[in-house]
Structures are given as structure tokens and as C-alpha cells.
Image 1 (cartoon, rainbow, N blue to C red):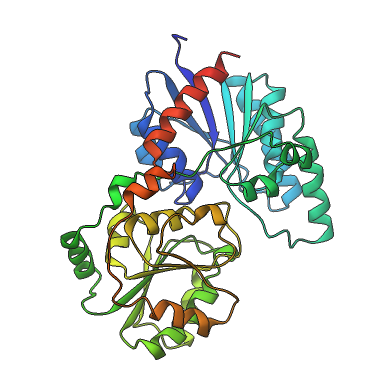
Image 2 (image 1 turned 45 degrees about the vertical axis):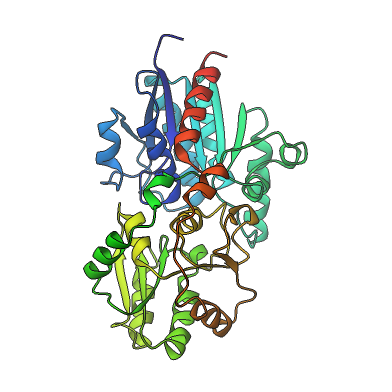
Length: 375
């Protein structure tokens, strides 16, 4: 195929895992063969915006931010996306989904005549919903049949949450792992000390977490664990990297517990590999994850990693991965404290061999888009 394949990703370009994966792939594909654009639903400056512009990508704005009712919101997403796609022609629409309700974007794409429409599940849910939401999610899953030409998931659990039962039972989906640029996570003591100095960390035991401040990331529990940890390790400090709607609530909780001098709210950053080098342990107690890319990054960096059962087994790649049973903060604190003084080495080769190196994934996706555009 001589023409450039045009792909529209429904990705928010914020600091989350969906955007990070998509934008990193965007930077590694041959832009003379495949061009990405991004469908966004709010008119705002985004974390990855300046980066994607360097790749000649465009933001396609369908602003639905004024609609607060969820059903009306998704109806407007459908209507306005359809109108936008009539004016902007794409070979492939790639729906990077975080809820079954995102089927409406696929429906809009099909109605607008897009040749190939993909749904990509990036999340596994806990299915603890009201009866109405569970019913509506099931309706949305059934609607996917005949709308999507292909189903992609970052893990089996993400497929089970997102896709129709028939697709899951018959394994009519492919796994595309959330990848990272593994070589960025090589252990370097000089870089570690430089970034610890930037954080005003000397001999302290630095526990870290990377994730948006949202319910599924379980930040309240992180603070509960840390409040126990400092009773065992008085020199401990906590580094929280990310933003999100629940951040003010967590900041208030930290103040209430008298931990303000011990907790660093770092915000969002493009320097995650270096910040992970500065850490001594990583806490990841999510209620659920489609995969948990931060856990892959932490392992690649050689960080002792402490996870809830909400992190899929497929994420366990190296000896530094530890599940902590139950929800007793004391158990978590003791487990994390036990990692003090652990020998640090990276696991770059192991992560690459497990198929999580994004350079290889990007090449596969480039070929995949070209193939599908020809159908």
C-alpha cells in the first residue's frame, strides 16, 4: 500500500496508561506509512499534546464536557463523533476503551463508513455496579457484535470485563501487551543518587506509587499502609506521582494523619524511569487493573514491588514482584519494610523476553494497521 494509513485513536492524551501506550507507539512507527490522530472529548491542554504534534498528529475535538448525565453524554459522543467522521476520513478507528459504553464510538465509526473498527480493552473492572449499570454494560457488550472488526485486550481479565461473552469464550480476541521502552529502565547508581538529591532524599527509605488519583488506584489504602510503615521504618517517605479528581481528598487525609512532612505529591512527569530509580520500593494496591503498566515499569527498574490481587497474574514477570494477601495495612507495611537493603538490579532483559518491549510491539502494530486498511 503506497498511501499513508490514517488511524484515529480514541485516547485522551492525558497522563494515564492508555495515552502513554498509544503516544509511545506513535513515536516509534514509520510516519510515512501510518498516521495517528486522536479523538478527545474535552477542550483542554493535555499532557501529551505537544509530543503528538511533533508526530504530525491532530487532536479531533468532540467536546461533550458540558453533559453531566452519563446516558446523554454517551449519546452526544455518538452523534458528534459520527458528524466528525463524515468530514474526516480514516482507514481505521481504534477505540481505546475503558468502559463497555465506549461501543458508541464504534457504532458512530461504522455508520460513518469507516473501513475497519477496533475495540481495545485497557481495563478490568470489579463488576461491583448497581443492577442498572450492570444491565446497561451487558447491553453495550451485546451491541459490539457486528460493530467491531477486531477485539484487542491488554490481558485476559481486560477481555473478560469488556467484551461479549461469545468473544471471550471463543477466544476471538488478541492480546497486545502494554509495552514500555525497556532500555530506559537500566539501573544506574549515578542517576539514582542525582534524583534522590532532587527529591531531598538521602538515607530515607523511599516508597513510591505512580497512578492517577482515582478510586481504583486505592490511594486511601496507600496512606493507611504508609502510616503503619513509618512506625516500623521511621525514616520512610512516600512519593506519589500523578494527578486526578481524588487528589484533594488524599492531600486532606495526609494532613489529618500528620504525614505532611513525609509524603511528596510530585504531580505528573515524563521522567518515570528516573523517579523509579530513586525509589526503594513500589506499592500497587489497585482494586483492579487491566494489566498495570506501572508494575511492569517497576519490575524493569528492579524495584521491590508489592501488589494487590487486583493486578493480573500476567503482570508478574520477575522475582521482585510480590502479592500481599488481604487488606490489612499492617501486613502490607511489614512486607514493604522487609525489602529494606534489597540488592538492586534491573530486569530489562526479562521484560523484553516477556514481550513487553514496546519497540517490538510498535512494529507489529504498524504492520497490523497497514494490513487492516487493505481489507
